[in-house]
Image (cartoon, rainbow over all chains, first blue to last red; front, top):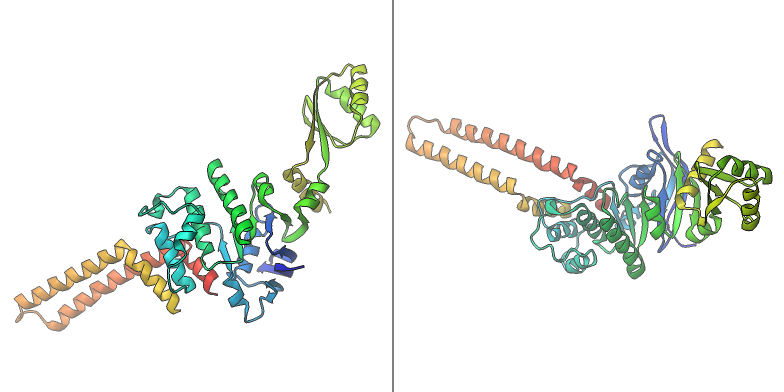
Length: 304
Length: 85
């Protein structure tokens, strides 16, 4: 398998506090990798290690097959673009000037390609408008534009849609998908917006207590999703009694709504419940969401 | 390092505060020189120069702290480390 990023037993301690603990992670080329974990799980620390802002306490990581202990890591790291926490923008300058500054930092002698990058992120019509007058979505897109300078193969985005309005979220989502498909850029995205992440990610890594609990592709995840049937009833007690009798796993959502996690014979269920003076008012088949999968997984990991 | 300096100067040229400080130091220099010229016999040359140097020192200290502080708060230093390490 061709990995753009691979970590081997990566560890990071802040004095006695273990933030990352034997972390093993694999990101394939051309993937959009969704890194999921609660606050303090170690997402940003992991990203800071990969970007070279901090050094790992133990373990290694490989970018495009080059180890962090190798001298060539500096060359490989130039193929990475990153936005960590907030995009690094000079607020007193225009979008074009920000890109020009990045060109100088990267060491590109001419400004060819600036208009193309601005066009990709749809900021080509901002003219002399200073970045401090940009909306949050525009700033985020400019951040991605800056990360695109130097034609990187791998872009790391830490919480890219935090604080964005629905329109801004859609813009960022479409931009990521476009860059992934058209330019073949691999993305590592850490986000709390699981619903949004599920729309773009092609594989997921679930991070908990400094460890990757599970790495799974989108296809595998969809296969693992449990189907559930949501019913709305008027007699909750009788319904629960019946479900307990037949040994079907269920979850009470509200006093009138119950989720059933099993394949059941609907007509049998309705007949049995009506005999017990319980009417089924509504019936819906639903797929498990990434959110519920994550909660089950992390809950399970914490109980282990 | 040269690339970082080039980027730094590029940003510096775009900073209004930089041009304000340049202007204020030029004005101060003109005022001091004018004073020196008008009362040449009464003013000691060393004293005038050191007055100017002190003023410029204060100006530079304020400017650098504002400029570097801004670079840090806007995440530009972090970006430079990511690109250049």
